[in-house]
Length: 190
Image (tube, rainbow, N blue to C red; front, side, top):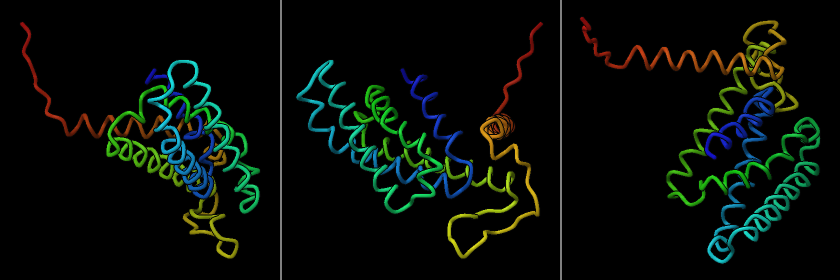
């Protein structure tokens, strides 16, 4: 189940992080919906079992996601229109995390995982914006055009295949970094 949840978390990570502002918006919305879901679902976990828990978590997640979507439509319409597909999938993320047992862990572990995921979303969103547009922070404010790093970017990085490429490069860099800093024990085999 954990592998399935990890793969489901790739959807907002790769799809909704075209720019830093998009990553920030979906991160804030995911945090708000997950937090409200965890608080509202905690008294129901002990009282419901089996199919009733699934039905309650589906209803609660869909309700909270719809409320967050309505708030985004009211105050952040341009961002909401660009991220509407991924906002609808937040309910699926809540239910999948519920059934993976994330909300039964200690609060410190939950907070650590959510913070790491949020940092990863912001990192990928920022890198995709720098590599794809050549600037950082474009769209965060109407009067500020962002920090221009270089005049033009590679449009591939603003698309989902570019997110896969960037994620592969980041994973390879992490593996090279951990391999270089780990103690390698050489053994002689006759």
